[in-house]
Image (cartoon, rainbow, N blue to C red; front, side, top):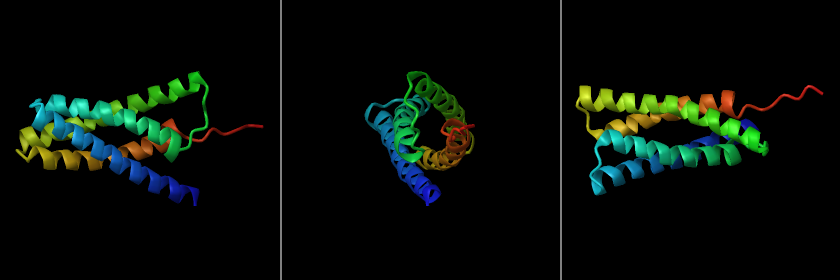
Length: 134
């Protein structure tokens, strides 16, 4: 049951993270008139901060609270998300600049790819359960 709970919460917070990413992107491009590559970067930063907190506390229930361990988790999380940022911006460049897809549709496609990759990295690398040898 714990595995089902984890997947359900990951999807819920993934949808919220995606919503934050897209709303931030739209805010930047439509209201602030920021170019789509910079808007993608800003949206990424805001959504990664939200995702770290929710993944740590609610999805993977990381109980580690020492400053050293939390900083390690945060570092790994941000490194992994830099990889997914590369996927995000790469997908946007491919779909918008090369294939001339509508930028909003491209943003939605990019987010699906990013959510899938992020789950596996978070589960098996960043917030993996510590094995006690006692």
